Length: 423
Image 1 (cartoon, rainbow, N blue to C red):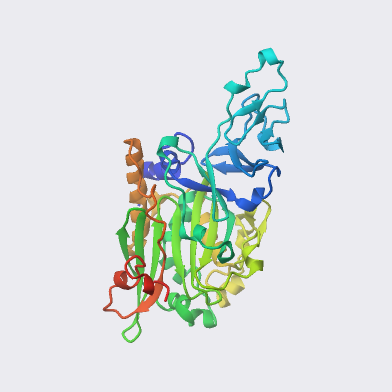
Image 2 (image 1 turned 45 degrees about the vertical axis):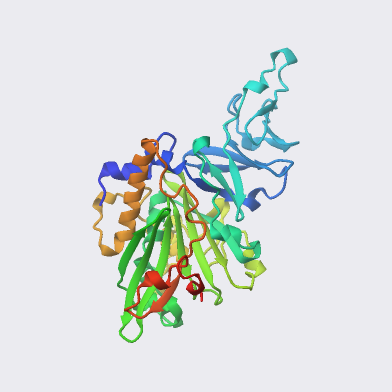
């Protein structure tokens, strides 16, 4: 349980807020590369941490991310003409480059031209892993580039998409790092899904013990689910990378590939966030091209309408089917991600955490909240928050069934035993 003041502190992310100042110290996924695929293509709107921004790719292929309001008379630069290495406002023709420099002021005669003194607010960007990332904090405190392992595999071996979620970012994050919910929220009521493979063990073993190990990037944690004396324990490890990243194991899902999945829950404003979903494979076989190049999520129930909004959304009650809830799935809602969003969006725009009653399986959620609170204090004192570094570059999430007497840290820690990590 949090107090109302604590809940406000870690959920509000707009300019000038303590949590907003923390988030600005990290590289944030801003949008997908294909959204501005070609040089001089139309600009797009982007919203991050309560700021309305516009993104464009210039003639040389460089990416700019500027405040949407033109510094002249505040007209939207989304209306602008993307041409000849800059974005030109359609109101009076002022033109800006990717760094926010005003290049031209054609409505002024030469003696009254002062374009060299005008700058649009601009944020640095980097393009990695089919994502354009933005850094919105102090330039002198910029962390290393966000080189998660999925950004370093061949593009044929990863898939990235995004989905709008209509609630505060912390609800999405806490849902992601809550491992035990998959035994209920995502349970099938029939068939092989509850009996086959490691995913089926989450339906069989519904109680777990959580162990959380703090790290230089956040924490590594494991859900330990006893199966029986003969089979041992089903161990699934996860990583929480400060401030909005979860990496989870999926080694026995999909088409039998050695997969690792992850999410970024990125605040747009206090009542909406964008979920970036990604997975990558470490085997020889590429991801089927139809899936890899899809501009919508390819998972079940992932269909979208305009603005990356789910087809199954809060307005239509996530298309819950009560008959299917009785006979097919625990929720009657189509798709694992939609099931997650339904639970999280049902809490309201900003959940009232003063009403909670937490248990031992909420340990990861509690530790994450404490880390976010600590980061607020660290940044306020002029320090560098946890995770604004390169400590996460090579981490992996792994799942296995192990005999009860074996320490999971020895067998499922790729930095210690890399040959066993995805054997």
